[in-house]
Every structure is written in structure tokens, then in C-alpha cells.
Amino acid sequence: MINLVFECHELLKDCGFLYAVCGGYALELFIKKKIRSHSDIDVSIFEEDRQKIVGFLIGKGWNVYEHKYDWVDNKKSDSFLRKIVDTNDEGLKSINQVWAIKPDCSFIDVRLRHDECYIYDYEITNTEQLNFDYIGVSFNKCENGSFVFDSFNSQGKYISRELDKAVLYTDDGIPYLAPEVNLFMNSHPAYLESEYHRVKSVLDFDIVAPMLQIESRKWFMNALETAYPDGLERLSYLRGLKSSV
Image (tube, rainbow, N blue to C red; front, side, top):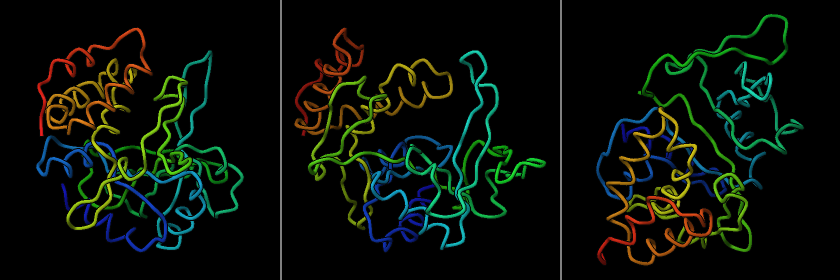
């Protein structure tokens, strides 16, 4: 539901720092039509603004959580939420993402775990977010005026995109991550091997990649070549595309 994007923008437009819609909704803002259903809405915020976004959302009545796992034998054994109650939370310094959830959220049911302060169990109750009562907030890096990809997406290489090319705007002024940025992050083998993410990733790539501007496509190809020097199937497809607008 594109209404979620407009509601999100209405909430964040006066926050005082840069944010950008990311993921599938960002791709739809680029091509100006619906591609598929979405599980939720996600935004990107720069790491330097972690405290600002947490304080802003708490001030607006949202609850903010860190999504955490317990590990046994290098495998995830338990998934839970840790509530962040203020901007002085020590854990904020190393968190890559937070979940912002409204009280009585229709998408995620959150329940306090017995005898554990600020630790919550949760259940995702719908396959698609229908109301604006959840935001997935990812923290990314900005250096020297460029969006810098984390080591997971870049495979430990230094890969960046100039900020004025990494963040685009709709005619209504809604900021969103450029399509080549989203497609690069979703080209990681972990997404393509995941049953949950693969179908979405393939569909997004098949529809949006042919619509990239030439410069955007060249950057995308170079980023893939840098991150995956042994080759990636998507590179062959991109090389075969004819010049577009």
C-alpha cells in the first residue's frame, strides 16, 4: 500500500535529518507503479543520526526495539526484542537496525517476557503490513558525501555511491534510495538463497534493472564486479542489456 509511504513521509519530513525509503517501496517510487506486495515499510537513516531518530520516534509515541538473537552452536536459537527507552542507551552505538512499533500494532504483537526487564517476545501477525504502525529503520554509513555500503553488502570491499545519486526524490519530495542501490544490496547471495527473499529479489531485479539509466547501470555493474570478482549471474544479464534511456 503506497499510502504507508505517504504516511511515513508525513511523520518524518520535519525530523531534521536525512532519511530515505528503501527496499521494495523505493523501487516502486522509482518506476511509479506497484510491483508486488510488501511485508513492511523500511527506511534508511545514517549512523550519525541514530540517537536523533530514536528520540524523535519515542517523542511521537512509538516504541523502539533492537531485534536480537540468542545463538547456540553458531545457529540462531531465539529471536526477541529489547526495548530502547531513551537516546542514552549504550547499545545504540553498535545497532544496525531498530524496529519502531506503535502501541497496539496490528502487524506485530509484542509481549513482555516474564521477569526480564525490557525484553519482549513478539509475533508477526500478518504477512503484509496494512496500517502505518511499524517502521524498520536501518542505519547506513555516510562518508565524504557518499553513501557507503557495509561489509555485508560490499563483501568487505569499499563500495560507495555519491549521496546525490544514492538518494533520489519523488515529485512530492519523498526521499528514497536509488534503484541501483537497492538492487545491489538485494543481490547478496544470502537474499538469493533465502526462500523468503529470493522471489521478491528476482522479481524486483527483472522489472527494475532494464529501466536503469545508463550511468546507474554502469555503477551497478561495477559494484557487482567489485563485490563478486568470481562473477554473479546478474552481471551477465546486465551486460546483455541494450542501452536504455
